[in-house]
Image 1 (cartoon, rainbow, N blue to C red):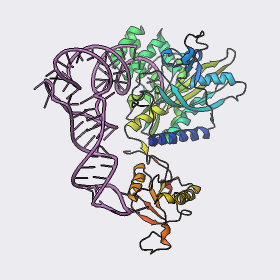
Image 2 (cartoon, rainbow, N blue to C red; image 1 turned 120 degrees about the horizontal axis):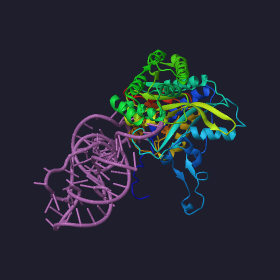
Image 3 (cartoon, rainbow, N blue to C red; image 1 turned 180 degrees about the horizontal axis):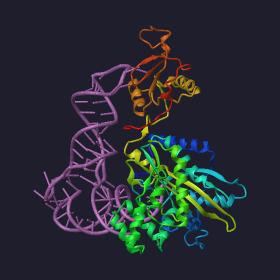
Image 4 (tube, chains in turn red, green; image 1 turned 60 degrees about the vertical axis):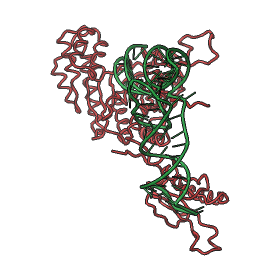
Length: 460
RNA sequence: GUGGGUGUAGCUCAGCUGGUAGAGCGCCGCGUUGUGGUCGCGGAUGUCGCGGGUUCGAGUCCCGUCACUCACCCCA
């Protein structure tokens, strides 16, 4: 490669310190998911286009996969063409159907993988990014308490991470659909699309859209706006909805479900992670049938939702048996990349090494490697200096990487010579404080907080 | 897919009505001949995104193109 490559927009690549943070976050998510009994699976990167397009009008979002030499080959039907998956829910539904005979239901799984979308990239929107999903799927019927469970598990996982304050907003499709039907709306989808704009355009514009595009009367539109305005952190939203005076069976069911989720999550709500009913949340994806989730991060509202999901009763079905599910998906890249870009999150050093063993001269390399190995045997990440440069340069090498300790090997000539001019024993220097003391590679250990890099929030 | 903005050193950016490139930070060296950071002195680095056009002359003007970026759309 001769010319300098240009960055490829939308395919973020992290520097080592950021990658360290990402891996810590993924480890943390994984630990929490497993603590709650979710099993890991990984699905293939590609699905038949036919499967991928079941989700709706996203054909322009899917990257097709074909061999360079395949031009002119016959079969380009949706059934045989492959595309990279653009989320983890659709492949999971396919996986459940394919393995239904071997899985135990209700099936609880987590999945942390890359996904691809043909987007125009900008901050928080990528063409290749990592999602972390948890879902529970059952056969025929999935008890409602799992709606509460997935929210609680994700809340617990996110609460453990060093992030700005998060707000989990919950709504229910039955509630809003029931409400819209209850007021006499004919085109529920058009109403939802208009209401969904409420955070971006003024209320009177939304009202105009409701009247023009969803064929509502001014009164009906007012009721929709009033509903969308309701936001509470407890179940008091129920009374406020009822006060609007709309009667509908589906609405009542949705109200009861949403109240159950809000009450069920009240104990995981903290200052840094709040859960609330927000009746303007709709979600564009049409496979959701009940509970829906979105999550906003304080100071990063323009990113949109960083963690979303909901209940889908009909996504997976083989024609005779249906597999209803509920899940929630964290956008790991959307969450972290903006924090990295704004220097709100990084690692205390860019390499795992806690110790750099200084190299006096090339002849000493084997001896220095032994010192390093003695440290490693006790779990201390250690590297040997690459070149026998002046010690000042070697210290600088460590400093730039954030390696906190430099190990100076004992001078072998010390036995024969005057101890005043030679370093008789091994010494280790904390380059932050400058303190240096004699040490034995078989017993010395760094302070626990220096053993591994730490995730740090520079200004938090 | 639609509509804006921007491309100059490793990074952030200046560069006037066209006269063939600059600053800060970073990097390297020396002061300080095996202990860094501070300070002082010195040094290196650019196909001015790419292609074409106008001109005696283009980083600067024009056209095209590519990339990046922001907003919309949609979404993690």
